[in-house]
Amino acid sequence: MKSRAAVAFGPGQPLQIVEIDVAAPKKGEVLIRITDTGVCHTDAFTLSGEDPEGLFPVVLGHEGAGVVVEVGEGVTSVKPGDHVIPLYTAECRECEFCKSGKTNLCVAVRATQGKGVMPDGTSRFSYNGEPIYHYMGCSTFSEYTVVAEVSLAKINPDANPEQVCLLGCGVTTGIGAVHNTAKVQEGDSVAVFGLGGIGLAVIQGARQAKAGRIIAIDTNPAKFELAKTFGATDCINPKDFDKPIQQVIVEMTGWGVDHSFECIGNVQVMRAALECAHRGWGQSVIIGVAGAGQEISTRPFQLVTGRRWLGTAFGGVKGRTQLPGMVEDAMEGKIDLAPFVTHTMGLDEINHAFDLMHEGKSIRSVIKY
Ligand code: NAD
Ligand code: AHE
Ligand code: ZN
Image 1 (cartoon, rainbow, N blue to C red):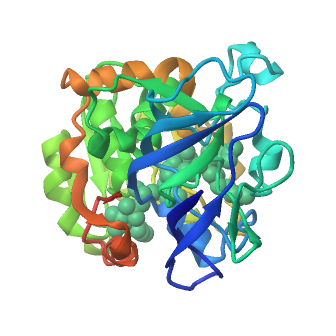
Image 2: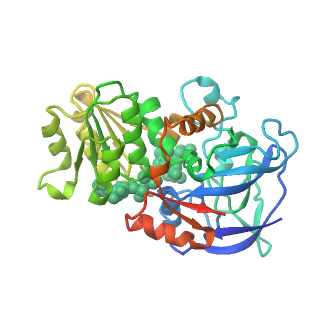
Image 3: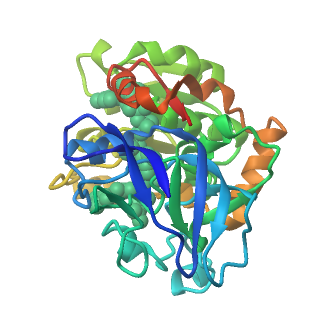
């Protein structure tokens, strides 16, 4: 079938809106009509050419919501008409990782996903007869996309897709990082570096966990108002100080914070986030994605003296099992999604969504098909 799609033909190039061909779903696959998709900084990261797994031409997008159109052979967990959120972290419930009870990092489709193809090693997308790569197992920047059955969470059909699409990545990642990765407890102190969709979701999660002090850090003070609305108790701009921001935070708190979260993808900030953690027990969670060749560093003494460095993907959330409940939480007002959607637009304007992100003017732009 034909589908309108925003195709990234090469790194650093604007997306082009073209009509691509989408092949029927094969065994274990599902054809989805995407109704709404957020634009996450990871899409911009891969488009920039910095992603070691970046492939072109590709249909980007991984934060969507849609409706099942057709199922391939053997698919039993969803049927046409079901409302779904595509998952870039699949959940097969059969692999060693799924069965471990220790992680959400299912490996069922991860190897082929990273190569931009479906589990059988081929693409369902083409343009002028030439294959186009899939992205993160989702490719939500096409109105019609094909994903693996294990990469779909079935959700309440009454949920607002313009909002719950954000549970496909950003909001789930931030909230999940607080509860599943850091396990923030009542009264704990928290520092959040970077106040985009991810960092603001961390703040919302920290408030759910009844954290005490929540220190929000960004170089763009325009982000502070929403951070305070979500529960930040202090907002600070590293540019306002002539000493390292980790020193500022340690001085603000005595010995540092119980938990810090890096939500930017900057390896220098990752170091600062680790070093503002409390001597003896403070932990720092890396959420941001850094470019090819970049590495983190700190004095080992920082770890010897009890700080712990952690990381998280999709907030440790098992998508098929836990995402439907998070959608219900959003419908009941326990997760507040509306303030994240600062802009909505049609697919034709998707490059504007990337501009708004780079200019620091949006939290999330949602593309509506
Ligand atoms: P965003 O662009 O919306 O927000 C980033 C924020 O960081 C902005 O407010 C910006 O002003 C701020 N910032 C930039 N440099 C800074 C600095 N030096 N000090 C303080 N603040 C600074 O991005 P986003 O969509 O919220 O994504 C954030 C990061 O999380 C990205 O790296 C993205 O790829 C990553 N991410 C990871 C996961 C995961 O599962 N691990 C999931 C989603 C996104
Ligand atoms: N492809 C990159 C890594 C990108 C990355 O870390 N992605 C995050 C999700 S970002 C969502 O916005 C993630 O979940 N990683 C775990 C995984 O399995 O992809 C690289 O460095 O190669
Ligand atoms: Zn994302």
